[in-house]
Length: 198
Image (cartoon, rainbow, N blue to C red; front, side, top):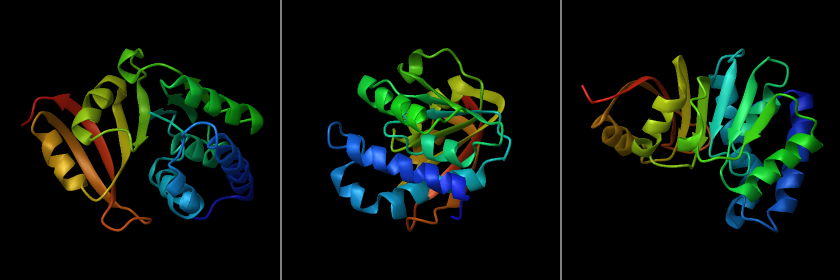
């Protein structure tokens, strides 16, 4: 995915900070560090292409090391989109805040609480990556999406099975966008979430 020069510079700063902090706390698996740019950052940038330019309030659940929340926030600095990164692990939340400070990122804040304990955020967009299976994510989406909000969830090769399992208890609209970085993976776009299968 192509990005602006400004976004590229921010991503370079972010990657350097991530590599440094990852020596102290486990933000990203050591095995994943070799493919951080080509696989993981590019994976997250797909969300920037899929989601509306002016998304309003974007909530990233289980932000961890900033994938995808910070990566997308860098790419949408001038769009008016505001980002809330929800991360309950205090060390990871400290890292996220440090990146925000050092990159002077004005469009993002960190909420260091458990997702289920945060007051409903009425998000226009929700993102999540490697957080939980889809059935476990559905209560979070129901709690935090606005009425017309949409979730963009990065899912691996087993996304179809997760989708079937979620549909046993939840009603929702969905679209699967093929991943450009991982064969057979998908980005699930989900909206109109309500409890109770059809």
